[in-house]
Amino acid sequence: MKLKPCHFVLFLFVMLLSDKASSETLPGLSIVTTNEFPYQYQTKQNNTALEGYNEEGISYELVKSILKHSGLKKYEIKWYPWARAYRIAQKEKNTAIFSILRSKEREELFDWTCKIFEINIWVYRLKDREDIKIEKIEDLKDYKISVWRDDFRHLFLEQNLGHRKLYLTNSDKSAILMVRDGRTDAFIFYETSFSIFMKKMNLNQNLFKKVFKINELSGTGLYLATNKESDPDLIKMLKIGLEKSKLTGEFDMIIGKFNTPTSD
Image (cartoon, rainbow, N blue to C red; front, side, top):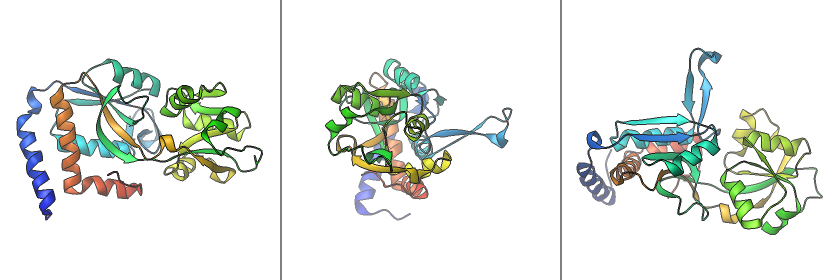
């Protein structure tokens, strides 16, 4: 691959950084995540309980590329329910978490080590619920919202709106089903992955309509973030891995495969 002059300078900078941190002397890195299609998820091999799981998804592939190019040898990806993964990442040093949205509520909780890609967040309702009128963020207070417990959308509604009509679930699918079944009025979801998520979950996307973009949650990114007490060289090597993945073209190739907008 022929590098542009600006890329060549960045390549030399990355290589110099690489020489200062040796994977062999660093502590192991624990990486926690959760099943959230299409970002990272597990599927049974051959549909049997004995064959283990395949690990897939756009974020999963991007993080694996970052790890490969970082030179880190001692790491382990662990799968937990989101609330548990979130607590572990806050409490245990030398721990990273993905995919996590960067927001003002979380800004001081983590080192925002590697930006994966940008997202836009919308409020969705049933198409035939024309009685639901959401034209500004404050209008959400008037409706019952189903949302994934401890997810960034839950935290946003709770902290910024003092929302008292929240119905907490253990997955996005459950939140959507509550709206479909008339138990809640609206849910909040990623615009870029809505269609593929609904197809994978065998849900009819034509039942729903996006009605309001939450600007406060849009235009930001999903990240591989690390505990702020982690070894600085671990964080440095992850950042090197991200730059190397982009320089080789592998990062954009993975993004393109999933047809999702790239980050800056």
